[in-house]
Length: 271
Image: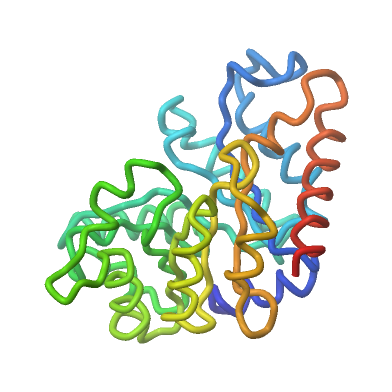
C-alpha cells in the first residue's frame, strides 16, 4: 500500500485530519514515567494508545529521540504502532537535505531502519537531494514549502526573477516535476493561512502537512477553510505539545485523549 492510499484510508477510518506530533521532552514527563530507562518509549506509546481513535497518523520528530540517545526506543515505538495500529501512517519528521550517497543512506534510515511511511525533506539543495527518497516509489516525501516559524520568511518569501515567491516556486516544482510517483506532499504552516490558500490553488489535491496549531497559535477554522482539498480532506494537521502535555497529574493519558478528541472535533466542525 502506498503512503497516499494509507493516508486516504486513515482520514476515512478515524474521520480525522489530526496528526499527533511526538516531541518527547523528558523534563515534561509525568512523574509516573519520569526517570525510567525507557521513559521516552513508555510515554510515547501511552500517547499513541490514548489518541489513536482520534487521529490520522503520528509524526515523531527524530531529534527528540536522537538527542536523548533513544533511537532504539523510536524503533520499538514505531514497531509497536505498526503492529497495534496498522491503519495509522507514520511520518518521520527529519527534514533531511543532502545529496548523492549521503541522501541514499538517510533514505535507508527512514524507510528501512524505521520503516516509516513518509519523511520530511528540505528542498534547498535541489532535486538530486530529494531523488533518493523518491526512488522508494510507495513512500511519501513531504517537502518543506512555507514553514510555520517566523524565520521561514528570510528565504521562503524571496521572489525569483519572475516575481514568484520561493515557497510558491517550490510548490509548483514538487507538484509538476517531482511528484511522478504521486506520493509527494508539502509542509505548510498553519500560521500563514493566506499563503496556504495560494499553495492549495497551485497543487490541487496534493496532501499538505500543516503544523502550527495548538501551542503555535494557528487558527483551525482559517486553515481548514483554505487548505482542504476537493474531497474535504487533504491535510495532516499536526498538534504536538497541546496534546502531549495536556495533563500533568495521574490523568495525563485521559487528558491527551480529551485534547486530541477536542482538536479533531474542532477541525471537523470547520470542514
